[in-house]
Length: 302
Image (cartoon, rainbow, N blue to C red):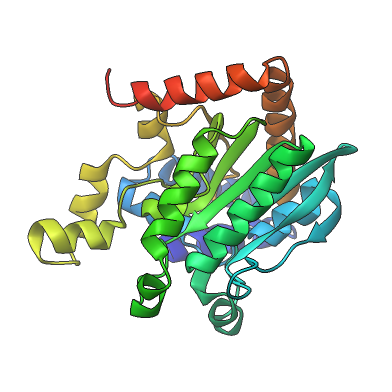
């Protein structure tokens, strides 16, 4: 249904370019009605929006928001994990470390980066970059978009659980500013391993949850087809999570999703990062650690 709505909106926009008179008025009315439907999406529909293949990927955000990006590879223990992309870059001339889950736009690209599901090497690579950033006083900016960490036996054999747990521990006490942005899917510990941040932001149609809706439905009802019920029960939308204090802000998307009007989206993210960095720069390293600790201790108490 979501793909049908997006295609309908794309077709309307294309038709409007050459329409005039009464035809144009009718097309505008149809577009406004469709925009109202996009403004009333159910949690399940927002999940489908978050998974839409044409949404911008981490490489698009890096290209649009940063300059002089120097990619870093390998965990210095085992191998390179292409499902995590990261390195050093400049944000308005300031050195930062930027990293995130990498997905593809085609089946071939997704297979090359394991559909954005990192193994332990990916999380160790991410931690290596974050510790390097701490050493040299660089802020850290992460982009979260993953259905979860890779659940294969070989990943478990190489220490998947330990790698994620270590990231959670180490990120909680980093002495530099950390900003995380959930751009699409944010599932389970695979997402949280890049998300223990001073400020967590979400795109309007992203989702952030302890488990995928299908996983939740399989556990609770033994039926992954009950995804709609799971989406409602998990309270995984940006709007829900802002109310709970899990995230700190919502970045708006164009009607029809993040893939539409990316320039406006990138400008909004740029402004949000700059604003949050300015506030975090006023804190000492010790204050950063203490406030981050307090932030996560109070989640769920209200």
